[in-house]
Image (cartoon, rainbow, N blue to C red; front, side):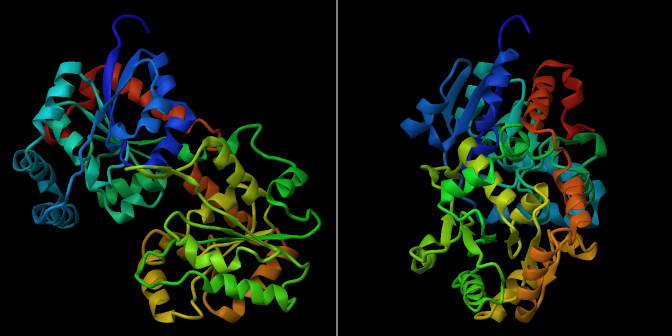
Amino acid sequence: MTGSPIWIAMSITEGRVIRDLFENGLLETLHQNGLNIAVFTPATRVTGFVETWSQPGVQFHLLKPYLLAGWDYRQLSIRTLLMRQVPNLLNSWLRLEKRLFPSDPELVSILKTLGCRLTVVTHPMHHSEKPLFRAAQELNIPTLGVLRSWDNIYHGLRLHPDILLVWNEINKGEAIQLEKYKPERVGVIGGAQFDAYFASDTLWSREQFASSMHLDTSRPIITLATTGAFLPFYDETYLMDFLLDAIRSQSIPGNPQLICRLHPSSRLESFDRYRNLPDVRFSYIKGHIPSLGWTMTRQEVVEVANLLHHSAVVVSPGSTMTLEAAIFDTPLVVPVFHTYQPELAFMQFQEKTLARHFKRLVEQNLIPIIWEAQDLVPAINRCLAEPGWYRDARARLVQDYIYFTDGHSTKRLANLIIKGATENQKEYHDPTND
């Protein structure tokens, strides 16, 4: 591409987006194709972050914190009500939102000065990106939203970008049904966070992986992937106790080794009492960017890929590891009981996990749900004895939800950003003017 560089704006409000996009070379790809990127983020004051990602064609601008007010909640409630009951009035309401919520003059000035052609919202379910989104609307700059995960739509989008990019066709259907997007305004690109999983040099030998975690190659590995303590006083350690009791009593054969992969919102200190046990290892995210939260390098993503690949079975009460294990055809079980807090488990699983983003997985029997404590050990033993159990369902999980297995989701995103910034802008005109 020749001529003067074209500017786009991009909001970054979470560290995990750095893992998903920057670690996969998005900035370099965009700049190599003639785009300059104005990154709007709370992390502009974090010297290490700016030094790490400073490169030709990239500017950093402060995105100040956005504190939700009562009107924000009312706005979202009204929009949700219209989407569900009176969808033909949605565009009228979106036009009204523009007038009701003033934009930040400073952000408007930056976008105008740079002449930005496109604004990329990297987490449209996050309210922190609203100021840049509103500034782009003020200037009639097209907005492109990137769905960060396969279950985000069920949690609800806080912003309604002109174009929404999702992981798979199921997400596209959800965007059309739940968020009332027109089909032509939803693109399917896959999950960029999994690109490293499909690289040709990602997988290690079993000996190399065992050496990295000081494990015995001759013994099976069980991985417990936690889901995070999403409820106050919710204790996640019950499954550690359950699995260790089963291993010690030899109810699970082969003297397996146990790896606990902690969700970013799990409390590490709650698991400290297991740290020195001889056959227990921990895996957790170590990267942290002040003001953005947790993140991972590409190398850490590769390590997780090998953890999943070399595990004999993955036990997870509802995390995205359910999908990730399926990528490597690793048997998995999903326990939805709690030996200590059954009441909280009911609130977590029955009213949230299984009723929302795992609903289709349960209805179509794509994962083995373990409803009662007495059924978990038999299910694990079946996985160990019959690795093919639920294999067709795992393949279906990958086909339906991971969708692209070529490792090029970041490139697909880059191509659509380049198209949106350089081609006929009518393709990205404001839908509320339809």
